[in-house]
Length: 378
Image (cartoon, rainbow, N blue to C red):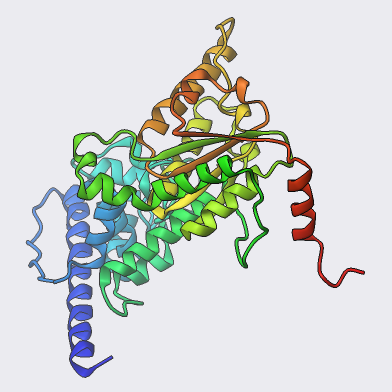
């Protein structure tokens, strides 16, 4: 790192910290106005190029002005004693010196209840933590420690936006890990032995993913429509015919991580929770460039049935949501099934590739055995 670069980085860190403190002060001013009704002095604007981390984080995480203000208020409770004093005054108890959702909803001009939701960015990305306390709106809010350090400019070694990207990528991966298991792709992997037709189809899938950025971007297809930018494929065949191994081979050749979705964690008995969980998985996969593997997909993507009771209606709603969400999914999803006829016909029409895995013949079985038996075996 040369002297000139170190000097620019030090200058940016000072400007970033000043801009962050100014934003926290401005957030505190809104709270003071709500308490006293008196206009607060204007906070001088601090120039920072590239933009300060807190602003970059709010933009990339999709925070509303209300959510951004809550985050700044929670940061103020850590670095600004006056913010804690005002929080205690609003709650009527000096010991309750941290912001709460009740305080935020009452003191901001454009509040919205969705900021409290588990699938809202503040909680879904763990930017804020709900501390122990009675009820949802009365529980104290704390900013995540790594988020606070990032907003202060700690950990920046080069482009500041890269720090925010790492921060969010780690959180989205953690969200994905809650519903899917990352498969180990280290090493060369087991050889995949398939008939020529099936191997050719796998090569087409790999080529499709490799060149889609050029086709959709440089050729302009994405500008025409945002639908169909992803790729959903079905691997059909009996157990042991190589469906999972084929998924590993595709991910390894593309250089992508492979996550196998845990249906037991994804599917919930509570109405609407399965859709939220699936949204979290697909959202993380969209942004992080991973391959999603849905094993035994007929359990989740099964045919819709005639509505006889409320259970049928909600089950059909889940399938309808999956159909809608796959339309906007931009990644690679591999579904495997040994009962392909049980998958809803509307899903089947959306599969760009359907690869049938036959039971290996004698020559293929011999090749498989030769590939797995170690040379040192007597």
